Length: 318
Image 1 (cartoon, rainbow, N blue to C red):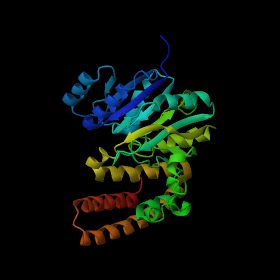
Image 2 (image 1 turned 120 degrees about the vertical axis):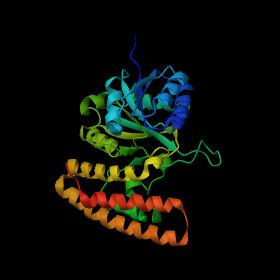
Image 3 (image 1 turned 30 degrees about the vertical axis):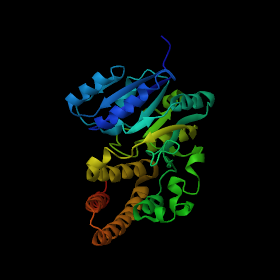
């Protein structure tokens, strides 16, 4: 049989309501190109997973029986993938018509392109052009960029490269093309690039795994591009919000691992100094905000901020 154009790997971790919507959107575009869907379950409820299998029997399902983290689960799916290209897709996304063949064609038509991503939009409110576009591409992180994200400087000066360069704030997200990295919620890697750099680094349990992947892809001589006429809708952070505080700890630990891998111990030290200072400022802002506005989300954000600061103060233990 001819090889499939694409293998789509979706990691499920207690996100079956969103997964159902995602798989329905993929079922609707099955005739657009030859692809397979591999759902890798990171230790969720077996009864619910069996229900998903009954609803979408055309997908492949791999139950790990434990939580191996995002990179570990993706790698398990990639190991059994049979498509030429591979795509990481979050369960809280919806694939719009035409998106997959446009992304596949972009890789096929450009031998130097190693990774591509779609134009990402949020759910429409009101329904205009399928939703509001947001920047799903980034530059590679620096301590300063992450400090600006933490303290709100990036939001205060959204169109200034100095403060919001991490998210290409000086550019229109609908016209982004050549970029440094693509958000892992919808990232397609070419067969050539994956053969050159291998799979995801499993040391990243959650966060920064796709940043590291893109870093290695670019180091191997490939380009990374957004394909603006390929559109995917993202119901952002639906699963992450249920495990918010632990996810903040994972974010800090993965950031330090990324900086250690690519910038050495000196890079980790610089990151920790900036993050500890930035998280102290963020905690002060949240405490002041809670005096003005009684919002349970503020308490949760403060808990997450304190957990992150403690993780950075502790540093990496291995």
